[in-house]
Length: 173
Picture 1 (cartoon, rainbow, N blue to C red):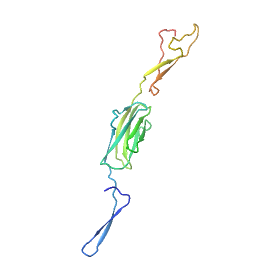
Picture 2 (picture 1 turned 135 degrees about the vertical axis):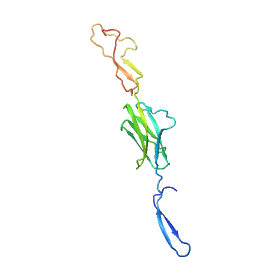
Picture 3 (picture 1 turned 30 degrees about the horizontal axis):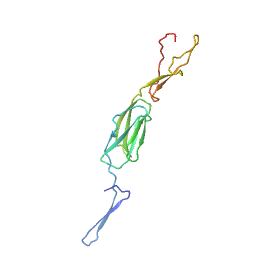
Picture 4 (picture 1 turned 60 degrees about the vertical axis):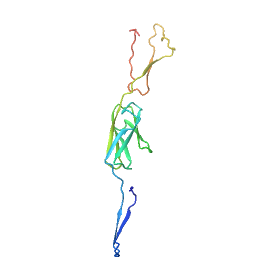
């Protein structure tokens, strides 16, 4: 029996000729889930995410039901959740904040939910380059010059901590 929007009328009638009968309205409701299990979709092998990385999650309901799932995360704002309308999978993308995020899958209009913890980890620095235009030749400036300005670029762009310190092999520089 599938859930129905409108009630069905059932009637019981005697067959002895007395024509006694009674009716009742029956509405078939959707089966209510009692458990939600949240897991990483096959093909994704981690719950550790760097900034801007994503993982897809799925919710399995027991017993199976057609009720929609509402996806949320705590703390809010540390991930972005997009739900695929066809599969129901949640694409969860990490934002810059490092730490644990709990993603919840809740059966709509109920308190039945499951969760999974994702860890937003630091995006490590992979490169640093001193910026000057001398085609890999030493930077030259005349004796007595007070200063020269050098800058550095740290990558990747989404690295969590892009601070750096300057040192020199010559104490006067």
